[in-house]
Image (cartoon, rainbow, N blue to C red; front, top):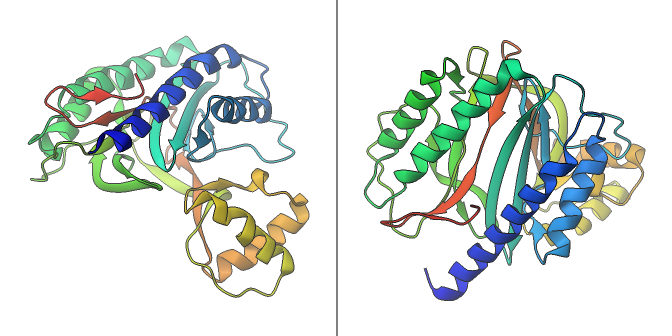
Length: 293
């Protein structure tokens, strides 16, 4: 990794960590999710970065991919457990970080489980370590707190303008001989739950990604394509599109049917178990560099 690229990753990481820590005081019972999302995304831009994806604000059994709509009236409620997942990029180089706030003491053990699993896994992000070893350590740590890892969510590699790439780093041990390589950039992302330990897609989709430009009939669909090309293939939120919600949803339907955009459905734990998440982005070295620390 050359120095220029490394510095962009480090800058993205600094912004992500600063915004993450600032955002903690914005997370409280009664807080509007729309206001929270807009605060976080504005703070990223004010510090010189760009959102690598719409901030995810996933509550209780929703594990990922919830971001507010334009007219979202949702607020954080008493006893909620909220996951705040933040992505920042600088010139396409991405830092990804997340934390969980529990307003229900009953689920503090889930937060402790993912925090400790993340800490233990990061120690292993050295050249030559296998995915089997890291995934095994994540599973072992989460189970030691009396909860289940989410088996079909994973950590992942990061590349320029690519949020999810190889290697996948599961929360449960897999038999993989894949070994980490020096200078790989990876997001370690433990998820733990009080439920069965799997998530499923829901029908609600609020985050999309431009996958292929094709001719479309609807003029609003063409406007959306032109608007989202600026994200260079990174995910975007429905609420970011500068059209009315009615026009957006009609146009997005055509774009989905024609395979122009890729969907990120909201993910929900299959048994309605509460889910917690913690995440850092790491550069693989003999002494791992946590860019979002």
